[in-house]
Image (cartoon, rainbow, N blue to C red):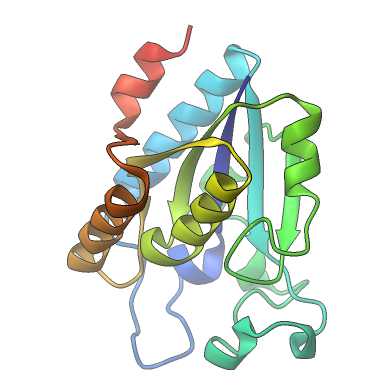
Length: 187
């Protein structure tokens, strides 16, 4: 079985500027959102696992992430909600996380193991941070990890996204795919 991870596609990073000096939005958002939507639907039609991951912090004192991003992912805020374009899609699970990696103090690993997943496909934001950290933790747990490069992005622009892809290749080899090729390969 394969799992598609949709990471941090939340309003505060995609639609809205972060509450810091960067004042940026998701690089190439229209294409990324469209590709994630196509992948979710393809994985669902092929009875593969689709998991939404989102930053959801109930107690800011219990995560180091708030030291860098003090207002990000605060539970029950509008900014922490998934974006409207992906809200109506079917997710087998929604995993609430409080740090960069989707595996840190969550039940993500037990969900994936329960479904006997061998391959994990990463989408969402931010390529070199939350997407990469989740991929690294998946790799450490023995999964085959793939980055869907045109279904991932960053709020820090094209250059930082490309650096994230290169960082992924440096750690995982050539396990970088494009949406169209992955959709075709799923049978």
